[in-house]
Length: 467
Image (tube, rainbow, N blue to C red; front, side, top):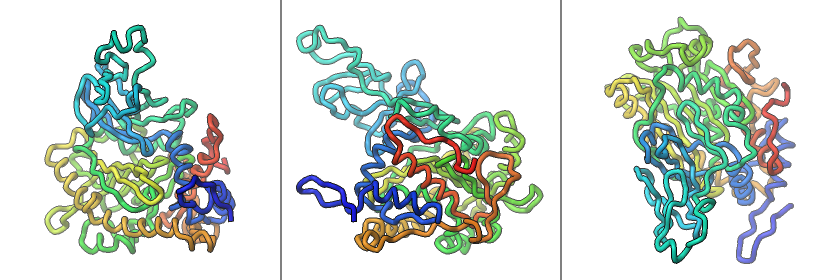
């Protein structure tokens, strides 16, 4: 058995990341993934540098920092970054560490300010991160240039439909190239009307004793669990589409790493919710000013959209109600990140969004429906967290290592199940009908493996192996 070296006083971490990544590469073509990926300490340390230290990571929505001086404190991996709108309206992502001694300079989760001041020695920075002063400057630092001593920015920052991403890797491709075909699908959720979307309040945050990859795996398109784990959701009338009909739809590998799933009516004339269940008076405002007719048609027939932008940004749009006896289901839109806190712990950041032109009553109804279903105390969330906890427990177990325990990701492979590849599809990516399929998760782990093993400064091709 291969083991990693460890410093005196540290516990051995078991199988090395290199060993497990070799197992992943060998097993993926057969639909097998080593369970230890979900709990191995060495793998996790490698993820912080090779995945979170390089990939584009979602941090905030522009509506959270609308005014000059507005800021929020967010994370890339386990590290704090200030996302702030400067006095010229630009968005900056700044490492939250004073250049003098590395002390945290931002002491609130959000707010509005013109400057950030280090509490240790008083070094002061503006909203662009420039060092603008310090106490007793002439005596202490006279002759030293302020330039070059500001807060360190992320290597690149970009926004798409108001979604703010950043990367720490200066060699990273542009955001649009990184997202690839996923942009087509983000357009048909976030670009349905000219006004765009906004967040409804600050994000919920709650910690689960699970691995961050379980959330990304699930939101890449794990629909198979709906009829078992979430069976009660149908029994209480929280979701308006019968389970068998809900499984009709598509699994899409939009581009390497990024996957999604649609529950979709076969034709526009089918009964049931349209446009993810949004009220008809709202959907009448949807148009093709920002999207194509094909995208509008897909959105019109869609009941559920669930997807994950690699590594840890997930999106969900669907009709929900927290109280089926008193309120019919309505469309909700939630975005979330799976913030790593160790190989066996993840902090969920969960935002609810609404189209800006929704009425206050519609926004309130969507927010309450979301809180009752996809939130810290929601019915879906309480269902999901228990299995993910045990996935992580299995992943860090000695038995999983010693028994060479592999997880089965074979659904939808040739000869397995009813899912078939679809050639006639208006959007990009590799597409399967129906949702009994796990190629979306295999796509996640294939790109994960390529990023984990990529040399510094080198990036995997953003093409599929069969293209």
